[in-house]
Image (cartoon, rainbow, N blue to C red; front, side, top):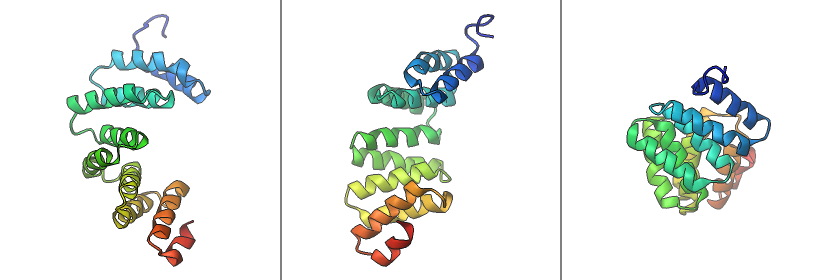
Length: 168
């Protein structure tokens, strides 16, 4: 279908997703760019482009895409989660925390937003607050080993070893 309509967003995204799943995110990136350009008003297409940039280690580009999405769609919770994640990866924890507070307010069912809020607070030394965020994330995704590990580490840092043992 791309030969018939080279600007057909769903076909472009399908190709980009297939390349990503095949372990070729760098090859997928131009297609994610095309898909986002074909759907300039779609925050979801922008989210996928930002994610592709992140998979390629291009965090500044991902941040620019996410900030532009937030400017156009200020109620799009996933964009705030994405920005918080990018800021956290960049060790900009105070900024990440502020963005992630907005993320969890707009998307309270996002375990990722709660987990990253926990990470930011843990790195800022606000460990009790991190435990609350991790618990919220774990309530949403009870079988998530990464969230459980974060929670366990925070509980160890608080010297709450009996509580940490079951989740580690």
